[in-house]
Image (cartoon, rainbow, N blue to C red; front, top):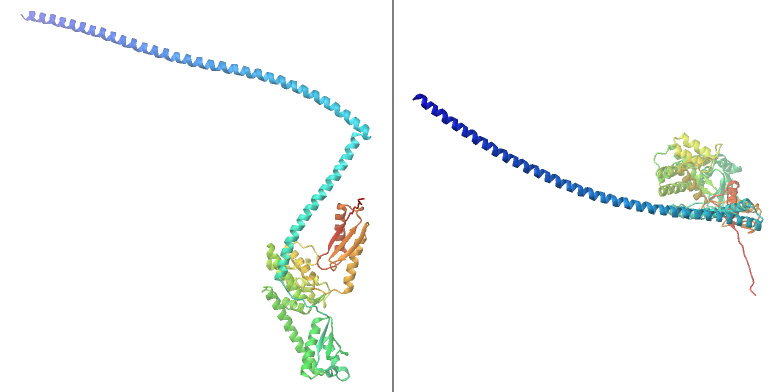
Length: 490
């Protein structure tokens, strides 16, 4: 029984296993079919996609090929056009060359004909033409130079006139014409005898102590003091006035009054020096230099008070410096001290410039001040703007009308010399010194001077005047060239 059941079970299991295997084989077969179908579908899709992409690529390539074909056709057209244009250009160039040859031949024939007619070779004609061009260019250059000079002169003179006018309006200093004699008023003519004294002892004492000559003549109620030294003359004047007021006139009293007058004058000199320095705003001036500056109060030059002149120069130089942006302090200080040498030039050897430079160095003035003092009369070349301004201010102060007194003889000689200089040139018809010698007008013969020569003549005359004459201010040279043509209508 046991064996039978076992066999049955084994048979059943085999059957089940066979069915299971068959089912599995069927499933596998089904899976394979499905996989094959899926793979075929995928491959088919890939093939279709590839075919689609290939088709698109082919279409793109076809478009590019068509585009390239069109471009090639366009390039071929352009190349053809360029070839045509090159041919046309070459043809035109050939025509131009032919015309150039023809023109060259024609020009050569014309040149030969011109040479035959004019009797000049080409080189000679060129030379004449160049000479004419040179003359024309020179004339044009002279005209341009003259126009520019006139423009510059107008602008510069207008600006300078404006500055100087402003300065002179702001700086008004009265100038008193000084002389070498002084008159002392007396209460009566009886006082003259007392001044002379017994056997002339009083007048001799006074003249000895002061160094002044007393002129007692028929002039009513006056005594004249004569001396070239203004300080001595002032001391004598003050002493004599004190003696006349006191009434006691004898040698001892004269000596006492002269000493008092000398002290009074020394105080006056110091005070005037201090006032001048204060007026110019200079506070650090050496005391000895202040005293020397004060001596200029009694010093004159061409009748012009030197201290007042120095103050005026300082003011003018300072105001011009302010107008143009220069150093005002240096200009004013140098202007005040520029004639300091005139305070001692009557008692020491040397020119007032040399003495002024020596004084400025001795009392510690700056190099700019010393240079301006030394350069204000062109003894050396002025190399600073302040030195130039001092020189200009000195000329303005000394050259303006009424500032100085020239003798009639010097004035006449200057006018004669101006006319002599002008008449010394050939081709001069007439010359006139006008405006008190401040202008010389020269009338030339028009057939001997052209515009350029007239300009040169004016410059030459001006240079000679600067070299040969000494004069205040400036002198204008005017050359007049006049041509008159007259016709009569009948």
